[in-house]
Image (cartoon, rainbow, N blue to C red; front, side):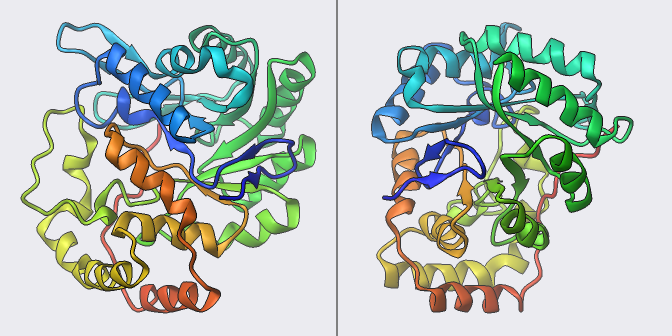
Length: 329
């Protein structure tokens, strides 16, 4: 598979990256540290070279101790640091009611980057994202702070997660943005409107939740039980009876097309966006080795422009109930 260049940078990555969040956060109880580090290392050996984490990706073990996702990534990759691209994020705190508190003040950014460097066990971060827009801080202020961190060598490039086009353009005018990381899947296409700006400004589009939080694998139904309050999927609308009914036609369509392409439904949902735009890099997450391998091989699935258009045309006739993110404070 051919590597993809991340925007205006000198970073080249395989077309499927790894979203590491689930090892610690939002997918039930965290994976024990030793197993998580071993799985992340095997993912690297499998071919993954783009690892996405965040300071906010934490979870609680049954004994009350904390799983820090950045620490897991850092320990798994410490001796291959120069062979991988590590992205992390700042500016978000998860509240008990699942809302998000955002804070992108310059002093917060500086404190956060030092914490991330320490937890990752590295002296630089390849790609540093503002995790969510902070309405109290102007984009120019955030961009100026990122420019200073780049000059100091603490980060190489920066990006914005869940950005709007206006915010992106204002920030980019101060310090060029390398990548945006927005929610994107066959069921969540509202950010396609920002594609022209990405093309104009030479900015990569990193797609998180590219399989609609696992729904597009076809492995889950409304009867699936998600265990514990640390698994956020339990409250997502696509997993309700009504949400599942609305998506049944899509699942049937994907089942048929996947069989024709000798691929899984999950692979097809990733290949669709990879073949759609050369600057899109999905970062699906999984804790399971077989799923990690399956996702990575989606980079080898070829769809013609006509097949991509066929999928787009079909999607345009459908409406879905799908999770769109937690509210911010």
